[in-house]
Image 1: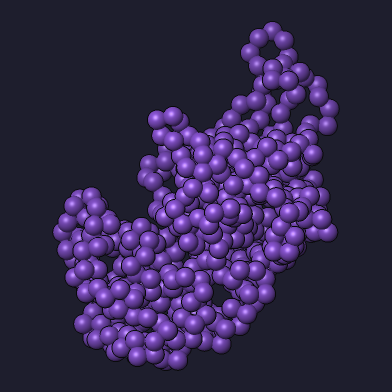
Image 2: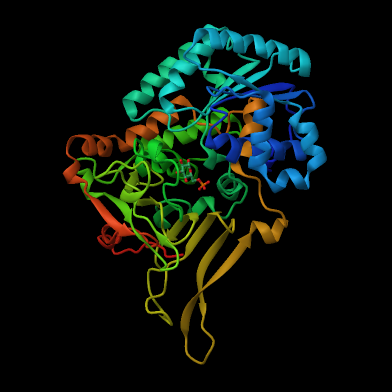
Length: 505
Ligand code: BG6
């Protein structure tokens, strides 16, 4: 008999959110209307928000409650029309207060407004503060809340902090010290929306609720792992932020590293937040660049140039609005890492991410070792290695590639695929990551949020690269790649050195 059934504490078990006021700082920004308010409305439609719920939007703009409500309705568009009576109810709980977190009198006014909302909506002083502001305000934002006494009760107040948390190892350490001086670690929810994706959580279930994978999930059977997050979009309206970040800080340090941690971690003793986060932190502490001494050998940076179809030409990064002329910000990164522990020693992990690639797709691909002896010829040249492909998005699911006998009189083999699709099996699309994560933050469940040691361990991995980019950028040149291609040729060469190819989905 198994001692613990991981499904017992079920990843999708519905739990009840206590009466609550969610305060979003940066409420006039992109994330609020594109992701956060739609996610909250979805929770409302699924009846997972308590009736004693309020959303207080805060930003520097002088909006009224009514303007905020209207803007959010516009942003949700047809979803509001399709669910008009639900929207009518939901919108009654939406409020707005102009707040500049740098101004003490604004924060004191906020504290008063929160008391009024407690009275109006019976939210009992339970508060989740969401910092969807520029990263440079994370530290001072927490300080302002704590000085106003808004973080005094660790059971009833928490802060959600968006990524990137820090710019490198040492700034992440300082930020951790600062935010921890404002509240307890249990009050700090560092968000990475990839952890809210059903398919990322499914990696845990696939690994730890089945017996067939764990015995082969190691260096004896797996020869390499590829983790890809490809996007078709360019930098869009976000050049201001992206110019200070680039793909390494925007995608690799957080989303790709979290996928790596979940794929490579040891089984936790229990399914509880600290046991899981201990294992993730441990694996990240064991991860390092394949060549730390000469990091330029294991990382490729690229930047998209113009391209696309004749009818729909696409601008190059340099021509996007808000991009500094001559910018050397990378929009593509590929790299090779190792995880130096008993399970993974010697197994290369290849990570890549880029904007303006031909397809939107995120996946983890585990390639198994070749058969020791080739008894059969293959119809496609060499018999291919078995592969397990975990499709994070879109077409969420998994597939396993293996060899079968090709029909005919000879004894040739041919690769085929066995598939599981979320859509076909469950008949419903999975929720957006923010739906799950907002609910968890309001529930006070930190399992899918990044702990302080994890975030520092993740930055530490990339420190040699960040230092190189800072001090000797010519050693890590930016290779141009045409929009709608799979990145610079140099990234293929990175794998070719190991006689491998990127999977072309
Ligand atoms: C965000 C990045 O965290 O993730 C964006 O800042 C990126 O640049 C986005 O486009 C990708 O998320 P998803 O869920 O669409 O893969």
